[in-house]
Structures are given as C-alpha cells and as structure tokens.
Image 1: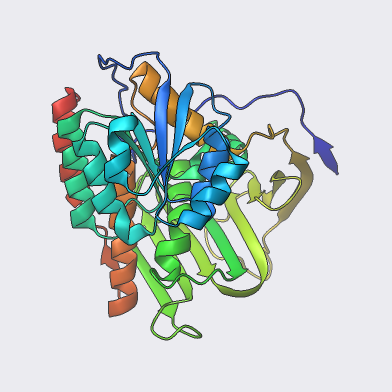
Image 2: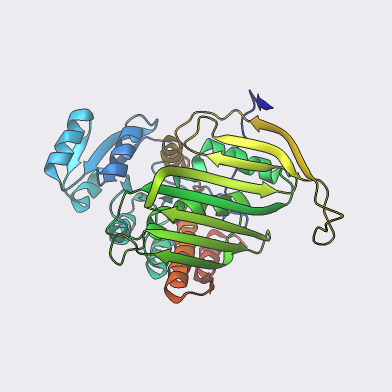
Length: 384
C-alpha cells in the first residue's frame, strides 16, 4: 500500500559539525543586513548554475562574472545582462564583497586563500581542496580573517535528505544497521581528479550529515578501467563509531544507468532516497519481526515483516538555490553557515584516507588533523 503524507514540513536541522555541537556566533560587520556584491569565479557547468541562482537570490546587490574565456563570458552576459565581467579574481576583488569559486578543484586553494586574505566571504564548490594540508591552511586563514567561509556540499540542503535525517533523529527507523549510497553514470570523465574525488564528496557529506558523525576508519577499492591511471570505479566502506554504523558507497563513471540513491536500513523501518525519482523519499515499514539471539535455525527461521510504504511530502525547492541563499543570509546576519570550511576539511580528510586505502589496499584511520584544526578554531570562537 502506498500513501502520500501531506502538509508536513521538515523541521530545519542545524548541522552539528561531525558529532560535536556547533554554536553559531554573531559577529559585528559593516555588511550586516545590507545587500552583498557577489562574484562567481568560473562560468562553466557549475559556475553557470550559481550565476542563474544568485541572479534571483534576495540580498544580492550585484553579480560579477570572473572568467578568462571571453566567448563564454560574453555568452553568459547575454543571458544575464545585468552582470559585470572580469578576466581575473585580482581585478574583481575591489568590486565584490563575496566570491563563489566554481573552478577545477586543484585551483580552489589558491583562489580561496587570495579572496579570504583580501577580506572577502567565500563559498567554494566541493571538494574544498585536494589535500588535507591545504585545507588546514584555508581554515587557519579563515579564522584569522573572521569572514564567512562555506563549502558547496549541496546535498545537505536537499529537502529530501533533510527529511530523511529528521526521521532518523526522531527514532522512526529504529537502530540504523547500515547505509548504502550509489552514485553512478556513464561519465562525465574528469581529467583533473579521479572518481572518488569527483563523486564521493557527495556521498561522504550525506553519510556524515545523516549520522551527525564522521568515520573513524575507511576501506576502499578502486579500478582504472577506461581512463589510463585515473580511477573510474570505486567501492567505499566507512566505519562510524558514534553511532556504530557502517556506510557503503559505490561510485562510477562507467555505468549504463544514472543512479543517485541512498538506502538506510533500520531495525524498525527502511528508507530509500532517490534523487532521480518523482517520489524522492520512500519509507518502508518492513524488516525482521523480532530479534533472534543467535543465527536462525531450520526449526526457527527468521520472520519478516512487510508493511506499508509511505511517500512523505517533500518541498520542491532547488538545493543549490537553498545553499546559495544560506550563504548570502549567513553573510548578512553574520552567523556561522552549516557547511563551513571545517566541514569541508573533515571531508577532505576522509577522501584522502580513501585514496590512501585504494593505493595501499588496507583499512586506513581517518586523520584526526582536522580535529586539531577544529579545536583551534573553536578556541578562537570561545567554544569549549
């Protein structure tokens, strides 16, 4: 039986910084409550999306395109005639209050560091950077600058993901046995990063967000099948201690069908989030009937429970629009964003550990360097 839940909005959920409660801070600023001048660095696939969204975001006073490709920039200005154009970030910095960096990952660190040192608020597309050391440098620079810094982990703003987390937190699904994520497609091949650095940031951020935690260790296996030495297929296992849950992820550029699913298996109910389905979230009232003390025997087979499947009402808001609005609102109200650079640093630490596991063929403990960085960051904020 399928039923539609209606009228219930998911409660806003505050990100808790990978298992530790984060206290939002108000900071005095000259830009408090006034509109923000924003520059988008890179007008390719994701940059163009940011330009479209920000052009309609309340609180944006002026939008600038920062793009070296003249033809691409001119085309964007024809679509968005009210924008200004600059060929470099250096040229644009005196004319903006904030920047959105949507360039290849290897360039994120240099551009973000330049912007934040010039006193600009910065949103960086995922992943924050491609090394933990670079991430730590960015976090320290952000701490010294006292500016709003954010990472584009868009799925944490997805209404279906937030509703799934709300139901997990409420205990509706019971004890979580495991979570499995699949992010598959035929392409798009990225010559600058492998499939783990390209696709897995989404899955890692979703798992961390749903569990309000981070993994203590990871194990990964990858293959370079069609693109030389670049891994185009990977299987990931993330071991969380608090709560004690194992997360799995399958990422691939070599699959005949585009797949974007997250399956959560609990003791009471199970759930599937499918980003490509009209019914993006389904809750299944099914599972084992009771719990066996030991393995099932022939004379005592397990009993399964099959119940209703519920499709909750999910608001049709675009996650990227919610994310970018959150960035602008955080600047105007001087409050900590949900996915700040510390969140991005923790995910970079996990990605680096996954990459090491593939290379060495063994489980790898997630570096706790980000914990030391967070401790320093929290000390500067007066958070114990």
